[in-house]
Length: 153
Image 1 (tube, rainbow, N blue to C red):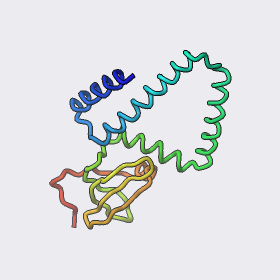
Image 2: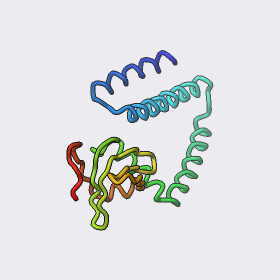
Image 3: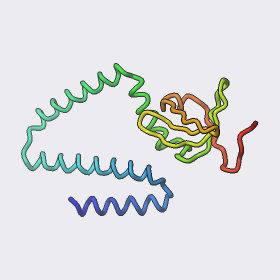
Image 4: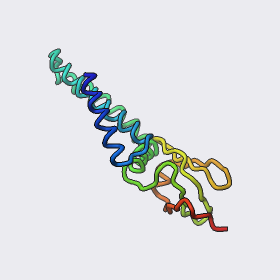
């Protein structure tokens, strides 16, 4: 088991250096990869131990049903988690990027400090730390600024 994890870890490191993936994103890729490996290892152990898959599937579907009802009761929770995955994998904004959030009421220019599962953290040029729900960031237009661009006065 440890040799498999070691091989996967080495392959991810090589891939992340070739593709210039940020350290924080690399950590999340490691965590997701470990999760998949452990799930596969658990399934293999279940087969070896002779677990009754009909009962196991009923148990797992019951847990997923409770979680599904919980998520849909708090749909904003689910939308923020979904938005964080989209921001992480498909959006060009990265931690450390200088951005302008296009909003008719506020002029928000600053640097992206962190993107978590639920919130987007930004430090404005005025020194303010602002947090947005990830679902709100997906609804706003974002202009990515070059480092040498200065905010308009």
